[in-house]
Image (tube, rainbow, N blue to C red; front, side):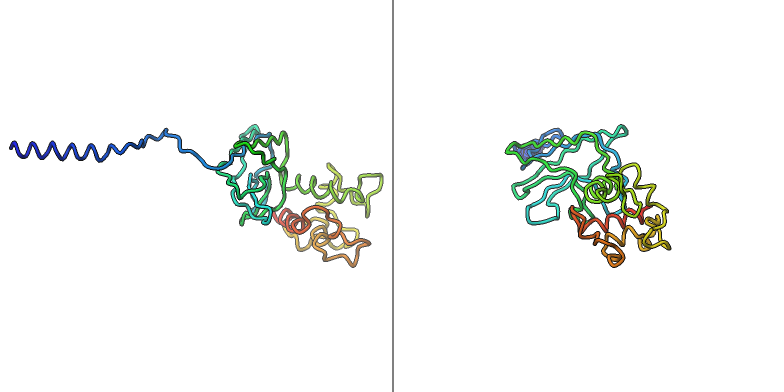
Length: 233
């Protein structure tokens, strides 16, 4: 019995010492994160308005690739307040953007770029912004490229106004002047829409100017964005 008690005590001592390896396993122990951190704040609407396959994110990119090295989806509360923290941004990342990516995390368009400072925390303040799909088409395509001919002055080519508050009503379920048998925008079926085919360079023979060459920003993406917006409706 004495030997048994002694062996038990020895085994218990060994067991306790094996567990006491100097590390702490409490859930509250902070684990240090390597790399820089981006914190985005703003008042955002329209985040969930994009077609399937698109995501509004904060993402990091290298200079030689359109595919995000790291990304985090952006969300907002019921009041539209957003506060997103993207951590672990390593030295490979050369730009951080508030942007839209596709399923492969390829950059589709950018709302805002962060200034990559030498500090560990990079702050992006976007204030109030509608990042919805149509709002973005209006802001980054129509306002940037199209309204100079379509309504910014007293003249609108082909009678088509693409200025804010007029563009939607001027296109959706409205017959085209150049193709009267087709709608400018026929919701749900981009293949029959004149707007899409004009941007995709399918109707240049009937136009006085090649519209696809006039798209000044991220030209390769706009036909697909407009197509997917139409099909989503």
